[in-house]
Image (tube, rainbow over all chains, first blue to last red; front, side, top):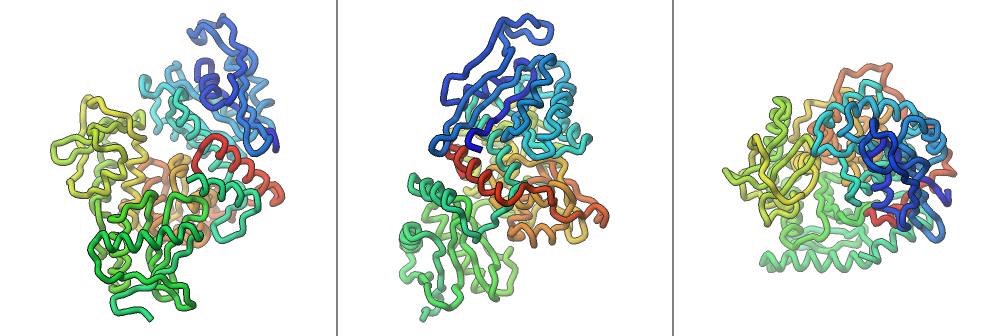
Length: 200
Length: 316
């Protein structure tokens, strides 16, 4: 898992490119072109292939960040990208006419990631478009018997993107063996912990 | 040999923290004008009256554990940076509990907001939310301090002195109450509204809104994102609840949480709308999910997640 990938998915204009920009240490490689699908979204440029960013961790490992194209016609790529991914961050745009219907399409496409506890949902533009509210999202997911974190976010804020990532990690850790304290750490974890304490 | 009115405390922390914490205890008592220290550091084989430990997976908390009858009776949480007054108050609480063995822990005076105060605020919050009141201010008397928008989950500070909700709750010298608003006043962005609820749940702990849990099946109807800022043991609780309902005693036994920590979690879930309580149906109560990755992958995953967190600057 030296080069795990993190997938950012969502409809056009949901903020995938922005979210990647918020955390990538390289300028995101974007494949924006003029948007010819103005019926679907009024923004002038949109991603037609993939956005790409990177975060280096450890000594030489890279977390690869991929933003999926938002248009429905590329939906076959979504599940391909999610295969073997560390996780999926699904961004929902609450300003669209039917955000919960949008959500359904992605829940279907990323069923495996949800089953494995590797998907988190960020709902954007809730401040201007408060409905459906969080309770509606909870009910919607509950009706499908899904237990997925749903967090209102503004992906222009780096801390909101980090909150999504940390929620995803906590979920993943739930499926791992849980250390409840007192058990020996491996050398690497101990090294990181020591480094953290030393930098306090 | 300890003097009368003196207690043994063991510091189960790393060496450099041990020196720091020992000096803090000394300074806290001097700061409070105590002539003879009530707390003597204990390294001997005898069971100490109390101990201090750092969280295993988080370095931003210190736990003061009060021992009695061969087990930990009560835990008090301290957050870095720990102020002298805060440490002194916690040591005092521990001393009172030790003096009052067998008595109810709730008889111990606390600083700041009390469990009952927090209980009232949580109760009123739920009542207001049930009547679809989404725009609220948290007021001291008539003075609004926080503006809470429950739709967008945002809280803004209406006072330049309030930079952390925790500090506001710790002050405890104001009578706080909710007020409904048609329009929220503008303020400085502070936190999420769920953070306020979880802080209140922490304070209320055993006096929260939960019904008697002894014969209830606990399950989740949503994933509480607030665990990100919570205790490591909650991850285990979530793991246990992810697939099947569980009883409170199951969760206590298998998660490593103290009762107060579990109540904190469940109250937080309840107030944020994540909790579902129902009758215990034997067919639903399943053993821990067996579909976990092979053990050989676990350390690998955990290392990768830790390193990515480190690279992104996400606190452990």
